[in-house]
Length: 320
Image (cartoon, rainbow, N blue to C red):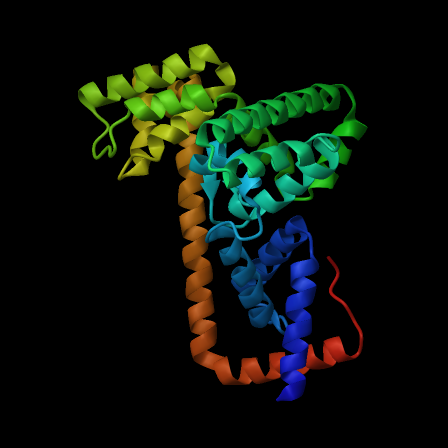
């Protein structure tokens, strides 16, 4: 038993030392193995430990300090608690925050990110809320401007773009970086939109449909890049998110798919489809895991622990 415990501790240490991007890729690969019905030695144990790390990130953002949490606050409405390789328009996997924060400190603003974070932390400790808010906004503006400058350089140089994506290391680094930039740069516009929305939208029809469309159009008029995030802000208030498609029908004046796709509100269809795909994938993984566990839980557990112990005791390491 002592040998098993030692192996598990070594496994936990190894998984925590992986980069957030590598952890996301590993989770995705193991979950795809479950869907295919392929047995992976120690796979259940590895997934269990990876999900524990992800819960720590989700519950109180344990791996991020307070200045990082303040920096990412405008991004909160667009976070999803799902693996980082799933395509969510405008969304960021919560598990990617650690990688984004590391990139900001190490590569984006290596000279002043630490001092800015320290100033924010000092104001927080002093209980000066006004100064904390002011410094946080300065920090957010600086990061947004630096990301925008990086995007401009990357658009002209493919090598720069590849280097940035590799530095972040998450499966959807480019999309998530764009979401962070828009959330920071457009925080006031999106906050205004959110303040005018009902706390809950049960039925997006008639007057409410017109009001929501007007608010989205107004946000997009201020900054065209915010259109997608305005759509997501509205969907966050819906009890039935699929109704977001009604905005596309309204904009097109038709429920014909081709007509809806011709409008910028065709993005609403992509958003809803991504949400449905995520729900279906989660259900499939859950069902496969349930039946696999019911049919062979004891045998699989013993074999997995034995093979994993031998694997690690032989000095072999996982490939990140």
